[in-house]
Image (cartoon, one colour):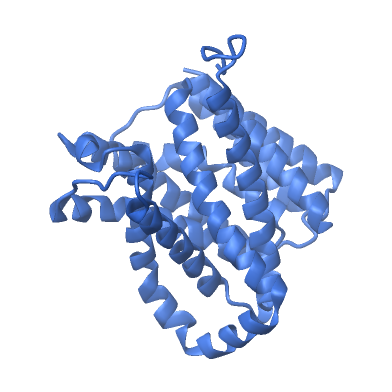
Length: 312
């Protein structure tokens, strides 16, 4: 609920968090695709470089926030805390990079529809590897989630098996991150040593950036000179890379702040609304296909995700 604050019972701060989360996610997704296209797209692009440097930009912002007077207090984490946080950070960074690879290889709207099926992956991994149990109702809700993605794929004009696999792998890593994060936050005293939600995301971003460094060195560092020349001469690449990096960091931090202030039901509805806005809004902005069957599949899949989040 967004009630409970000032201004006639409306929590103005929470409304601003929601607004920042939605707007930031929309513009991150849009600017990210524009940067990928400007760098060469699916054939000659630099998806790993773009994903890595978006994380670098977020890390620089995090370091600035700690160094600026009165902006954010430093965490009191120990080296062993950082080692514990590293797997969560690496999974988050890997999910980010896999999503970018998917969006580089195909339509953004298609990648987002597949990413919306994350609860199916989270359920499978939670049950098989983390000893969790799911009710029959939750299992039944996964049928429209998976069916909706399959239906959306049938009429995807820009379909790529690799785009599908990259988005699925992003979901796998996101499911691991979620499960590992729950275990991590049960560590006695860790939350107090981290200090705040903002600090938690900052530490995760910096460690995630370090996790992506080897992949960048292996896959695209040798072409970095070409990328630098493109960056200097191509305004579409430079402006969209910098802004997408900032949007990515800020919308993720705002989403974690929003989640801390809302109930599980509100989060579920908010996440569903956000997905619809981003999928349709970005598809319209980029002129991507909005075939009726694709949109029906999208509606069924996202409806299934909402039901899965709400049922016991």
